Image 1 (tube, one colour):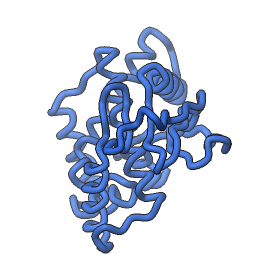
Image 2 (cartoon, helix red, strand yellow; image 1 turned 180 degrees about the vertical axis):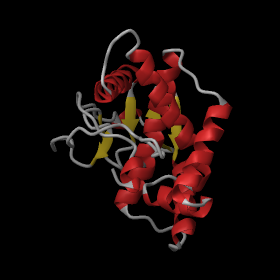
Image 3 (cartoon, helix red, strand yellow; image 1 turned 90 degrees about the vertical axis):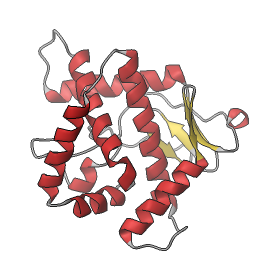
Image 4 (cartoon, one colour; image 1 turned 60 degrees about the vertical axis):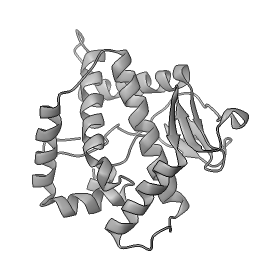
Length: 209
C-alpha cells in the first residue's frame, strides 16, 4: 500500500445513509452522534494543508475538501465506537507511534507533507495516529477469543464502525454531499454505487497499517 493510501481514512461495505438536510445546522459541516464538526474547523484545516503544500490560502479543490471532512468524520466514528466498547490507548503509545512514523518517512516535515496530501492537517497528525491505534485496539477487542486473520479483524472493525455510524447517526452538510455508510465516505450522488471495500488504515507504520 502506498504511503498516501495508508493515510486514507476508510472504505468499506454496508448500508446507505443520507444526510438529513433539514436537521443539519448551517454552521456544521457534519454531525456524528451528538458531536458537531464545524465549518470553521474544516476551513482552518484546509488553510493549514495549503500552507504545507505551498498552495494559496483559501483555495481548495472539492476532492481535497471532502477528504478533510471525511477524515474528521471517521475520527469521530472510531473514537466514539471505541469509547462505547471501553477501548482506550495511552499517550505513551501515541508518542511511540508518532516517533516511529517520523523515523519511517525521514523527518517531521516529510510526514506533514504526506499527511497533507491525504487530507490530514499538520495539527491533526497526532490525532490521526491516536485514532489509528484506537482502530487497531478495537479490532483486537472485537476478535477476542477468536482465531482470525488480520483481514478478518479488519472486516469486523469496519462492520462495527458502519453499525455505529448507523446507530449514532452521521450526517453531512448537503453542500458537500451525502454520507455513504457502505464506503464510509462522502458521495455527491446518493444513487451512485459505493466504492469497492478496502482495508481500514488511517496511518502507515514500518510494521504495517
